[in-house]
Image (tube, rainbow, N blue to C red):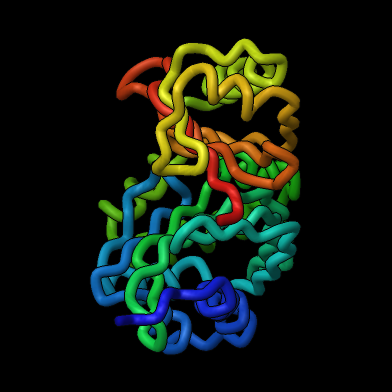
Length: 259
């Protein structure tokens, strides 16, 4: 019988990413991903599927920059690891962008052969663009360099696919998510399917019992999702809100807590 994957083993895979990024070690970073791995960065943009696309992602967004991870907490739920953090990216022109983020790593495989199957980076592209604009001429130069890098490494389709990251549920989605959480915190959970922890469906009565007293902090909208840093049942976690294909109606809520 295969031994269960431990938290330390999962975290070793996840920690390998900032280590390789900081060392600008392309081969080690790419090798962290499964052969059919996928990167969604930011969520809502066109995914990068497979080793070749992941290499191009590295060449476009990591290689030219100096990136520092400021991790506030890690949450391990099954073989999913969430990192609640902010990312400081110093671009080649010297502009530094500080972006709040939730990173989700879905780890696949068995002990000794663990890889990142999917990476979901929940952050707001509009926040980055506002910071570039606020940086004045240096920000303009940074944007001017990013565009040809995108076109060279990703092609026109990839550049357009990246720009899709600015679309999604936006501020209205964040408002819908916070209204849900604020109501749930006082025992008035709206009638929406809830999983706590993710994968475990609860009755309305159980949802009210477990979510009463919950608190929230960071709220991010990426694509047609909203993620929120929460403390539920006395433990830190991430709430993931999914929305219907159009509009701002929530159709599912998943709470990822330490398992």
